Image 1 (cartoon, rainbow, N blue to C red):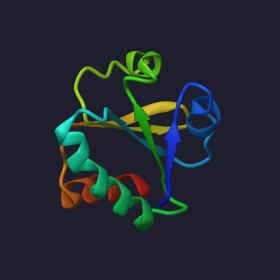
Image 2: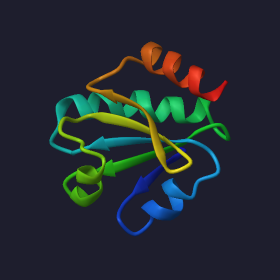
Image 3: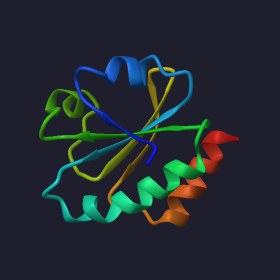
Length: 107
């Protein structure tokens, strides 16, 4: 699995200073749609190795970062490039829909 567990300690290095765009899955263990998103997210992480970094951030454990990104509903996927948000997908997204959005970003 090529998904990085993000938290307050590694967020700066893994996201803000990343050389490639990062897609962050803001989630919580108690969230049903987040659990549905997990296998889609993990399988896509293999497809985009070297093009996109995939990270998961538990909103309960890192609420400071979730607040910074104004995450008010989960799952919420935020794509960050050079430290700036460039795309956001809120709610469950199918593999097909997510792949279409990611293909636009990685081209």
